[in-house]
Image (cartoon, rainbow, N blue to C red):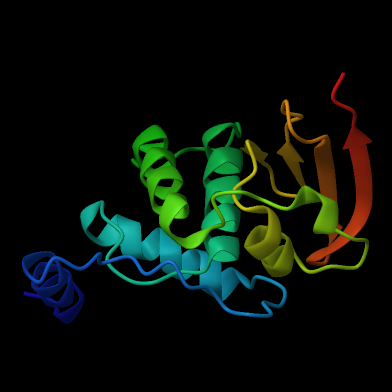
Amino acid sequence: MKVGALVAVIAVLAGVTAWPAAASPSPGVVTSREWLAAVNDWLDNMRIDHVHSCGAVVEAVAQLSAQAHSNAPQPSIAYPQAIATFDRYAVTVCPRTGRLDKITLGMTDGKVAAVAGMPRTPRLNCWLYPATSTSDGRRVCFTRGRVSLLQLSKHL
């Protein structure tokens, strides 16, 4: 049994969650190493056994979504299942109530994820946060991992 799986079993037996909710206090740009680690963690046994930042999870979903919708030859990955697993995991590492009003130009993608949480539509270069009854939506676009375009979608 792998150490990660053993830790998860011990945590479940102890009544503790295996997915801690804490994230890095000041995350930087999410690297390909970070989101690939999350994807490879899932590919190992179709579960997420290790701790990954909210930013790594969002980028993993964006990468998987792009691959699933590309015309390139596809490996045999169950993209919808992987994305659903990451969405469930995001609830444990991303803020439940995102602060879209705290997103600013120049902010890193890791920091946006830590502040605003999982976007409704994560894409490779832009993340979409819909307008709700309590907040205006945002379209947040990135260049080299930093917010380069921030558009507001007013709630009417």
